[in-house]
Length: 238
Image (tube, rainbow, N blue to C red; front, side, top):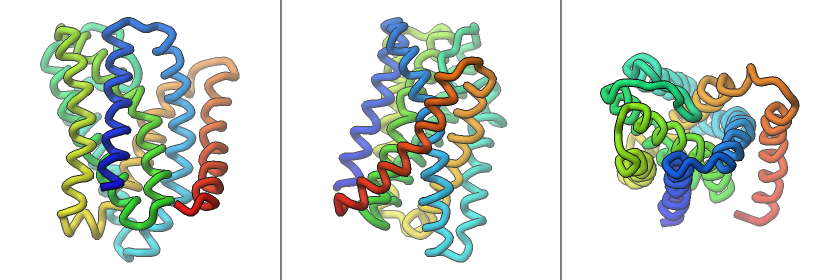
């Protein structure tokens, strides 16, 4: 039940990102760009310092599933989907490309839920850390999905609905993990690979070419925030 509640909260982030796009909230979108960099630093730290070591300690074949998780997201988002990137889509695309991007992101967001549920199966502290990692990229995720749908000629309502579907997939990931033996056994390792891919291969390329100090500061701040959050969560006894 705890993992489900956290997944529902994370799903709200998808809606918030989609709402910012359909309502053309430029200030909100600019703030979400900072979330993207901050979330990348936080997620990368969670994957490398918490999730992967914990998965390997619990399962001798975990490295294989970490690789499988990484490769599966690449397959879904950049091989089967012809046009996708995080952040706001500003170029016109075909309706088919928008729908294929939705399909690719649904797999990714399903594993967001798997990550949250798998974390709570290990401990409350790991569950909270994984929830935060998921939540931080939910806003740019919603932006990406809604803007892709609009760029594909869909209505604002359908764009917001597509962002909401991502949240539904996250909740489904939690529910299925709690009843699926393979996900109970290997979900944490798969989540490590998925989280690593989203942070290093999706989010970082979106901002690494930008000039100025704000984006790098947000990225390194995300990594520092993870270390501080881990101390606070552990001290709080979660």
